[in-house]
Length: 411
Image 1: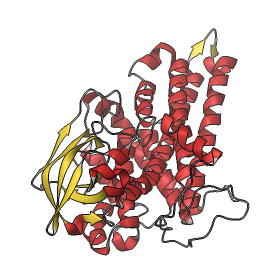
Image 2 (image 1 turned 180 degrees about the vertical axis):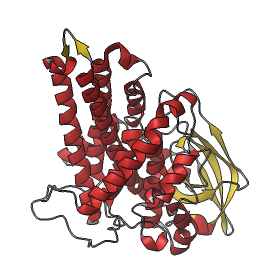
Image 3 (image 1 turned 30 degrees about the vertical axis):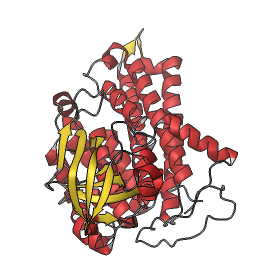
């Protein structure tokens, strides 16, 4: 096993890092304070190919591999969480799900402009009364000739008020649980679709979050993704993409907390010495290093497995769970290192803590991931065959889990 990044991976890391540090970091605190979503930054991300970094070139993307995808998420969130959230919903949950499940017509119509950054995609699964138990969603779909009529609402939707396309889920047979769940692409501007904003969030102030309401929304059958009743499988495979982007982003946030703590500990003096000279400060920084490096390796394993078309449900759950907890712990310790200054927005660490806390909740709470890992370990959870995630375009071939690799889930 080779733990070295390739030249291409290093180029991606350096490109995204330099962009984020130059363009995002200088305005991150101000945008957060003003609750402003910065369209100029998003347009620059699109021009660099970041919004379609791992989408095949034939559909307008950069065609890079999934480790590159993770590196991009890490370096973007190292600067500001709001833009990693865009990568999660636009690229991970929406675009990569279309790569995996969409028809050729859907890829041409929706995926290609999304990969180029001409259109923005979002994802709607969570509902007012349904979060983790997505199989029992209340949104309904009814067949009407060559169309479907959708009713229901989705909440806590990132980019709800700015996205052009939404991948949403509704149940054709509400009494059947997951068996009736079906996936649809809906467009802003369709009659019966409306959105609204949420205010008062603890963190990610610079990102748009809201609700999507469907009232007798007529959707052409051509906009159904997959077959009727396949929606729950599609949603769960989408979460394998989304959780990977959240986990790798959390590594970036953990690294940012470490970076800020090291810088401050070298500059701040107490009792005649830089505070970094004191063992209790060193202990906190050492714990940050340990957590960040372990989380990064867990995430890179997921990217490596995705490169070979393996199922990553168990591994992604573990990486997301651990990395998000590390991000919270690192940010909390970073405030401790900064002392009273860490409690103010004069330094970025208070923003890091506010932003980190949300990721523990979305894309599966830590309690959900605890159950997932326990059930896998005890043999109570077994993955059923599903459509395989596609290996990236550049030199990878689908293969079985290598001999000696831990027996994890696969498609």
